[in-house]
Length: 203
Image (cartoon, rainbow, N blue to C red; front, side, top):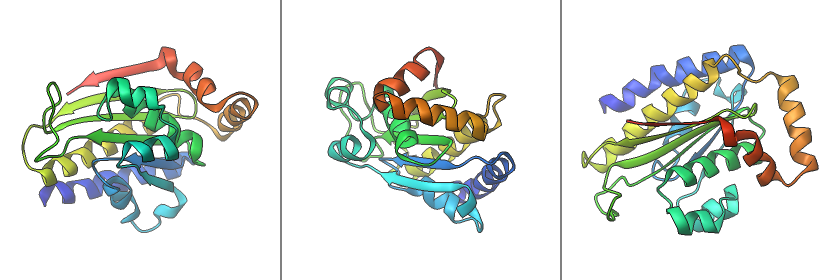
């Protein structure tokens, strides 16, 4: 339960940063089942920062709710950098938010496949100004609850890094991006904005 208590100060600090910069957040979660959104909305007054959360456990939900391409899911799998990035972009496009985080992984005890062990989790965060970062964590077979709780903390840290970034979007920037998205196919426009700005980290 220590991991859960560690998430609260991180969530509070993230909300304070976003509130001061007038940023809204959306979440897209698979293996954590809404725990990131729960950690944030557990803080009183979070409604001025949290827009919405998507829990997309199945591949069908990832496709229907976030627009993750079926070809991405079939080629790379649900637990992959590519799917995590697509989930974050999809959440940003579907929500009235400035920042989005996605999580997809194998919490265990089952579900492992060759090359994808229990404890493997992929994360991505995306901003309206086109910044996007992905990260891979291999927590190991530490237990389902611990994998999920550590994933929440990692997601909160990634969102905080994005919110603090020197290029955090202003509302003027957000409106400009929304206009471009409205005039072109949403997914292709989003991909063009982020293709050259992806940062991938492994932990």
